[in-house]
Length: 322
Ligand code: GLU
Image (cartoon, rainbow, N blue to C red; front, side, top):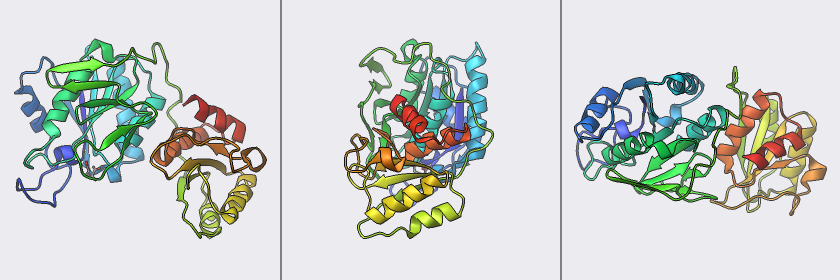
């Protein structure tokens, strides 16, 4: 089953060399017809969920994707699920679905860095690679994956790390799970989520959780503003090990005492944020994101708060397990 949401993979510039383009212009039936013509051994069923740039993806599309994935996972006629998606927020959709779906049947997000009509477009190749992954028996029990640039990443690890190159996606702490081309697929290890059920229930709604990007010389006022608009959680995209000026940490601590869940992550590209290194997390009531970056920390914190979890120890336990 191919669930389409839009993005550059369905984008068109109207010219092979134009710079500006519109995402989400090409219908999924047309794209599927083109992939079928490649002669891959798969029967593809297209379903259009949306035709948007993934910067605009949110609750309505996520709820629909989750419901369609659940239905397809329960349908014995479906072997795997592909979601075509803009690359800007692919890691967030992938992680949200990874946390809320059972791991069995493969769910594969795929996008493109270049629009479909650009010279050297990567869309059809990525799509063909995604078909290969989603129809492979060894893709089962690996959770939600993202296929980009001839690599397969797990939702937990993947992030967009460059604005425009076709190998824009990177993985941390793990690199790719596999290398894929339209004619080959090499897994680097066995499935790691065998038999796993969905880790979180699909929520009725998602609470407001904000990311606060730290910068040198900033004061406490942005924290107070976030608390004033009713944020139920704040993810600090902190400096280095998830750090921030003392005034910001003090304001976050005060906000924590008012019931807002606080998670320290890092604005640095990759690395582990550890507890109680420079910041006294025990005393201040903060949790740390470990290997998750700010965007994926926000997704997990939204799910936790939606399930009534905002106690620092419980939030930390969930991030430790992630
Ligand atoms: N901003 C758009 C999106 O994320 C286009 C970028 C892309 O898909 O690569 O959907």
